[in-house]
Amino acid sequence: MKPASSQVECRLLVDKPAGGAWNMAVDELLFEQAAAAGRWTLRLYQWDRPTLSLGYFQSHQLRASHPASAACPLVRRVSGGGAILHDRELTYCLAVPEEHPLATDAARLYRAVHGSLVEALARLGIESEMNEAAAPAPIKPRPLVAGSSVAGVAAPADEPFLCFQRRSVGDVLVQDFKVIGSAQRRRRGAILQHGSILLAASAAAPELPGIQELSGQEMSAKRMQSAWLNLFKARLGVRLACAELEPAEIEAAGRLEAEKFANPAWTLRR
Picture 1: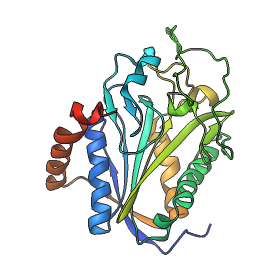
Picture 2 (picture 1 turned 60 degrees about the vertical axis):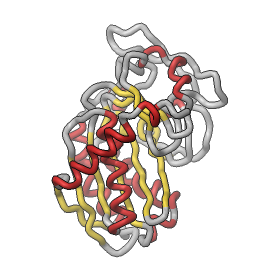
Picture 3 (picture 1 turned 90 degrees about the vertical axis):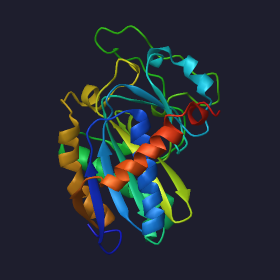
């Protein structure tokens, strides 16, 4: 397959599970670095406990419409869209400097990343497709997570509260259920795209089946990552260079965590 552009180096961070405010702070830091230093980064990470993230424009009061996640910590993303229950998933963050052609075409970037994920699922023997029409997800009966009896309640709004009950063009579907969704944020100098790969259902969002339930295959973050990264490189035309956050970056992310993402003034701003 022809790469999307001439190859550039993209730093690859594979982080340990962490709290929601930290995860959002690191994503913000990488976004800033892409704009200020022209640095590409792909970050893969997980969450140390089930956590609900609100889209930038969502009211925090809407979380009352989803009682299954009521006990989960709450954070707010810099990107829009519906709320996401982060639990049994692989999350990614991609920060791209604006001078790259993919940064000037948001839809192309979205499809490049999701196309590589569709290919990765195919390599694992799982049939999936990219959604071509924006609409609410159809309501389908399905078994709840073992031992759970709580179902989500529809949000009192035009769109469902949860991101994975919405449909956007380019979302990845398995058996007509959304299993991969992403959101973007653009600012002068860079574009941030981050998204969730729903590996398996969570007891805190039992109405959402994951790849594991839909395919009948056990699905881990490591297995998904191994199937995906070479395809990601080919689709985006990058070289991945494994790295870790530098001490100065850890310090800067800590400030963002304390001042912004762990601060109720940010989380409850709407």
